[in-house]
Image 1 (cartoon, rainbow, N blue to C red):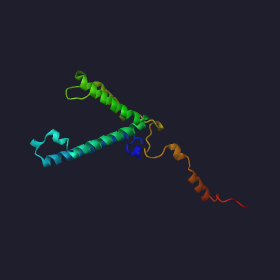
Image 2 (spheres, one colour):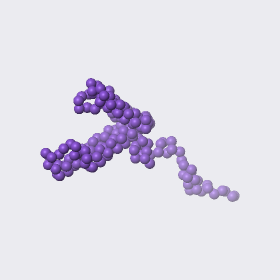
Image 3 (tube, helix red, strand yellow):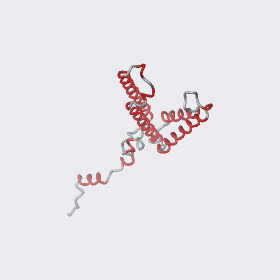
Image 4 (tube, rainbow, N blue to C red):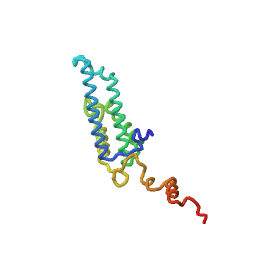
Length: 178
């Protein structure tokens, strides 16, 4: 069950990944706008400090929601490509941590004063984004199927209960005593 909640066992095609990413961006923009309006309604703009905004529960909840939704979409798309998200996502996170540490340890390697990463990390992120968006699906020669339906081999094979029902409905379930 958790595999489908986090998208580890589901698949998401290229177009659906792209559209879901755009929809997520629109929803998160609306959520951020609502939070900003609520903060501005309760405080004057001159009294707002950045440190106070990080302690707001709504901002933290929006960050967690965005992180989980992004994680789910990427995991579903990685599974559709044919890669294992249990291996790819932790490797991606580990690389970004190493990139952040390298940018902090060697400031000359960082992209700029404001950035927390290097050019190599930026190129890896770009390559993974392009792979998630444009890499063809690994199953059915790129044809999209519903991610929550069973595989085709299980659908085509009739189950034992269906065979029994067919035999009973045709009247061949009873032995012929004549």
